[in-house]
Length: 575
Image 1 (cartoon, rainbow, N blue to C red):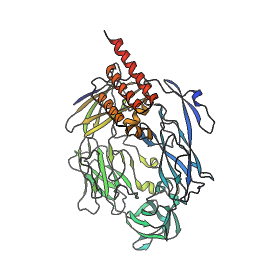
Image 2 (tube, helix red, strand yellow):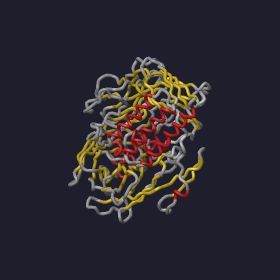
Image 3 (cartoon, one colour):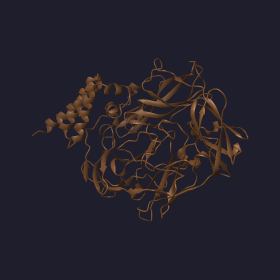
Image 4 (cartoon, rainbow, N blue to C red):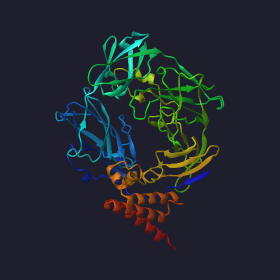
């Protein structure tokens, strides 16, 4: 199969915040001057007020409010605290005052380089005397006069007695994960109340779970199952948890993969019993030897294993839904893990299949090949009853993290990066590279300091269908950075992708608008030449009409102007 993708759009004007437009008090925002090829850009730090109360409506002082993710028209993602974030800012924790008010700072631009606006902030609210609220999503702008306050509930303490061989174990040697994200952010809130008992504070009533491990001389010697409990607000919640000696789990890649194995690794997660169950969990990984062997050194006793793996030229076969999944998708569009039960007889074998080669060429707008461009794809694995991540990208061992007792557990500190990103390749002096990809529809994008893929519907990547046994070819036409900005597509992308804002949902609810947006997507999908001014003029007119129907005349005018620019190009090119 051969594909040629030539994204060619007009050069958009950069969205620049002028000093005149950025006036206000110091409490409202702060400015930092950022520079790029299109000129200076001002990043504004804006604020919102969030009120935190108890179940009686009384304000709670001293609650920690921490932003952890941002939303733009391009999607919802983590706001990194290490400074390496697209917003070029760091999240800051604020405390509620006597009135229960916290001032939350957030950046005006989610992505400075692309000038995409921040349209939502996700925060966690934590007070050790109350149940943690870890996923509060706030649409912007946020009006404190009409918005509901965050209500923190009183929880229930859980007391756990670790046991080994039916006898109390030394609580000072026990580390834990539990069904509360404090488990990773602040494991020190678990305390030993005496030599035989651990206390887990302020967990929500109802279903809860814990996983215990024993550490001696830096080594994990014993592990429990993930033990469930039902917490009651009245009375003392106490359970005993038995720990057993750790037994390594040994396995192999299936014999169909030619030996010696190169760059092999497997990743494994515990299996949640249901899709909406907040449960303690564990993760690990192992390198695969040239003979195809791997060893998981530490695993919770008796827990099922979700297993995925990759090596040069091969990837784990997508697994079948286990009994814990009540409504499996058929057909399933995602890559899935294979589920292994520790009590099953026979060796642990990971079934594998061949990856499919994809030859990618990268050229500039003049058709000249470009050397040194990094091409990426990011096939995700969707864990059963859980989240997703790039297949076999994040390699970390739960035993390394769980040993941390008295400080924050940051998974990045424990991530192994020796294998690099699984699905990437750099172009040679002919602008060519070959990626090995899973079968099915996959995404392709680039990373480069000089070039970028032109914006298409507010995104900078394309899709390609990978068919087993067929070598694919695709050519990516790229442009100099700064030619256009994704921020120009903010409202359109917010409607086309996910309708993730109040405004987007309102627009999508209008049948005439939804029909026009479907026409817009179809026009581009079926266009043979996406640089064709006639095609662009028609598509931009559809967009303008859609926003006019929705009552957004400013956005409609913008797209009508773009349509007129394309029509003028048709006239000027006419013989």
